[in-house]
Image (tube, rainbow, N blue to C red; front, side, top):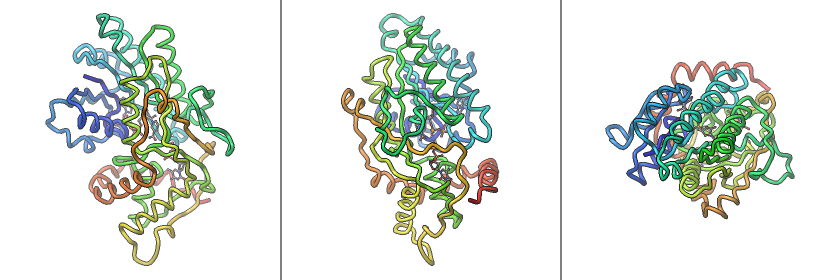
Length: 354
Ligand code: NAD
Ligand code: TYD
């Protein structure tokens, strides 16, 4: 079996659902269920003996050691993190605790468990650190895309905390020989994405008749990958990646934020037309994010060349499926928009007029 951390969040839950759709290998899913974790996403696995859900913190060394000893996983796939840049700006503490201290404790528990394994299991064991392209910093318009050899230059408390956790992961390989793999992926989108991130926020605000808040001039560029393609990339790295190596995962889909917002509006205009005009009329340019990175772009050629991986979806197919999923699942959206969610959105956007 495998141990997944953060498997009730956006990418982790997609990963667990896809894993169990394609394999009978059981999953122990360790998740703290912060505001970003949602058991409803895992509802299709209710009663499935292949899915063992444990509510807990990756920083709880005793709990993690017990889980490793009891279930004897062949791999740890580590998604658990605080993941929202805007929250890291307003309140960075949790990012340091979970992303740095939590990852350290998880690595340490994994090292102790791994060091006691019999030789065959020991060499087959993997610790996969799921990371982000944001650790590489911000690109100028003409710069080449990030490759695995780019220097780390994180700019937000979120990306700095992820960079620190990547460094710890690297050090556990270099110092102790722990068989680690690191993936650095570009911006994901798709089903079960918490509506504080750009794409789901635009969809739910558009449908609710609310403003579509675009930071600054909307010309910041992100490189978008459909979440299922990220999951297939992680499975491929787990299967064939070389311990100690880093793999960039991306779909070659660089787009300015305003184009993403317009693409969402165009799909909604087609699939759920609004009385009296286009959803575009709801776009509102607001105050920019402090320290806002201008451009990310991922060069995923190593994954493609060495592991034969490629994404299955283009941006056009992925964004259509995503918008359709939000239209088909209004109850999921309503339920995640709890009191805590409303408080955050109100605080974040209250004083944000451009
Ligand atoms: P998310 O915020 O949707 O989910 C994070 C999950 O981790 C939640 O279920 C939460 O309850 C859980 N969690 C948080 N703190 C925990 C703790 N201390 N112990 C146990 N569980 C805890 O995040 P996501 O978008 O699914 O991202 C998953 C991973 O992928 C993160 O490591 C992130 O850095 C990385 N990543 C995200 C993107 C993206 O576009 N979202 C891109 C590249 C990499
Ligand atoms: P986000 O989804 O928060 O991901 P990240 O900051 O990790 O890239 O934001 C994606 C881009 O969209 C980023 O450039 C910030 C911008 N953005 C807005 O313009 N308005 C918003 O309300 C949000 C949440 C993000």
